[in-house]
Image (tube, rainbow, N blue to C red; front, side):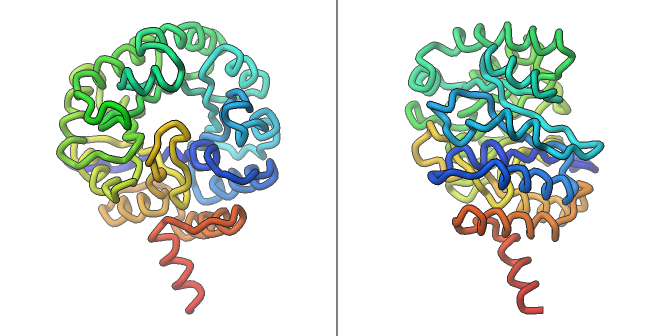
Length: 303
């Protein structure tokens, strides 16, 4: 298949990117990050996660973040809501869209939330139903689609089964996550092919981590198959707090550079995005893992 003409980036830096940071990140910093991302042309920003602060301390200010956003027209500000309590909190802030998070690995599910995959999906049913009644779209994540830290390789058919269930439950889009970044291009294609037998390609998204440096190659592979929605995190921030060895999401700057190089439109200003990546990494005192972001800033410094 030909590459898509346009790709929508789902920016997860403010949520997935910051949730595993060892040092506190202020609400003000998160709000500025979200505003800078919007200014760079990002049209979908996952801004917060309504989970227990006991388990994910960095997301303890979700309400303050969602109510403090200076909302720009044309941008969707979403939140992760794994249960009814989280959804209720998000709805009170006027959230535009929410997401639920499943997995294709029984072991991963058991170790993280002490239940089976089937039981975890049952828990999402009332969340999705309540969100739909409130007129709020629900996005579904499926993690460990190309490998699990406990089980190793995951059968594509298992990924397809979980994805199909979430889609039939009412999730308008399914994001396929290589949580520990062990996938390779051919495995990514085979997994996507299995899922696409049950779900239209335009309802699928790729969420690839870069643990072994394969994320861009894997994205290229699924773009060839027709994927037109990509999850990424500015400066490559993030990593699953429950998956040992997950080094982080693919950097938004690197993804946009790839897409623009392929002639694919994004409506994103790469220079502003690179500057945002440089700013946030300096703000939280960690290295910028985006090769493109670093190159852009180095070029600016020498000009």
